[in-house]
Picture 1 (cartoon, one colour):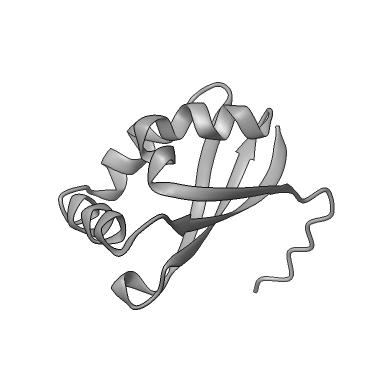
Picture 2: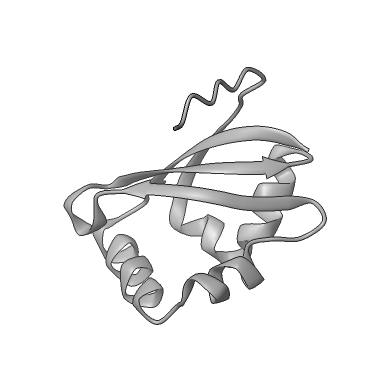
Length: 93
């Protein structure tokens, strides 16, 4: 699988609010179960909750379409800018 960074821009404040309300009900295990499969694996999310209209996600996937397919109906909440990142430098402690 390849590494991708995705900028998800909410299409409206209402969709942003719906997203965060739905996420309140989900545990990390729920997210893992719904956002990982043989073609795409959600890795990490950065967001500013309801204070911004954009969030960023790191995915491992076979293709950009695999990410959209894994998101399913949720993909329609966003303008999705999917970029393959072929060079990943990890300097974590």
